[in-house]
Length: 350
Image (cartoon, rainbow, N blue to C red; front, top):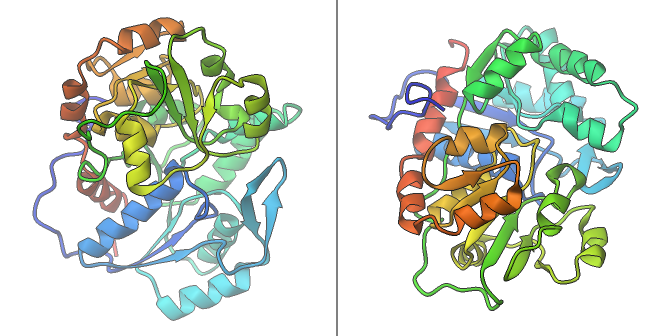
């Protein structure tokens, strides 16, 4: 991310523009991932700026588990309740965050009622589909994505490189909405140390096929590999990698202590559009090892806070030598408020 594209330091709170926000998302608690966290923080920041925010989520609706991923539940038959919610709340801005059933229903309502709306692209949907349903052509997935996002006033993506990539696939209404980190919550903790043989190599995130965890867990590294998170691939990976510590989901101060008590954060994914966990690790003073692909390249770039290489073991070795103070200093420049102001700049005029 170039200096011109990075979020600017926040100025005085702007009280103009939309006042009531409806955020529609198929991804929500109890899921623990970057999409959910980003939308939670967006709402918190908007409320702190004097806005009213409501969410339309699967909670309280009839849902069915997503095939091959039962932790994600899809809300079905939600259009009528969404219509009632929009009519009652009368939002000034509607943001549709996901391409699932709720997002599709909200899109249909907005088009029928001639309501301007925005969308965002959080997950590499074509790669996600290919990992689970390889018989579906990638071109067909992109056709669906263009159908979904093209009517939006703005389709928001996290980084300039993703913006350029989506432009190459025929998307034209793109804007940047970057990601930040809560540097008061995610921080170094003096004396924090996980009770395992070091060095400690940490992964935090979904335990699923698209996260490419084999590339990390199969490495011959000294010390201990630790995986925090749950997902459909966990049982299989636990059986195949018995020396790895699979700790399940962790939240709050417990999660921060696990970050701060590790030596290197290893990010083997090749499909993430950003990787919010990268910033969380850096804020805790933990350097990153990753492949030189879009998410890590956009977050880390040439900054001396991580090691990027197609040889992930070599990246891990280099990351182990990086000063933790440099990682923390970098994270301090990535505030959520500035990202929220980016989000507001992408909205249609009221």
